[in-house]
Figure 1 (cartoon, rainbow, N blue to C red):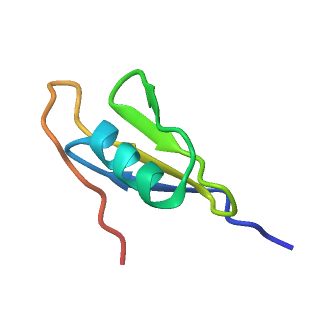
Figure 2: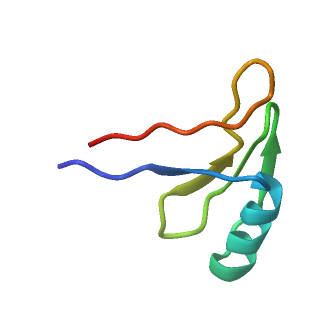
Amino acid sequence: MSRLSQIVVDSRDPAGLARFWAALLGGEPVDRARGWSHVEPPGFPRLAFQVMADPEGNEFCFVSG
């Protein structure tokens, strides 16, 4: 049986979103290097937030479908 373990969201403010979801769902926000933050709310998959940027710092996104 498969289990969803993490959801990753592109964000301009990863730390702010991690704190918002931690306040709403519980868990402690964690700030990581290179624009990553996450929270592991009890009973939910890890919610991770990042700023996706090219090497020059320009934001970009991937589109599928």
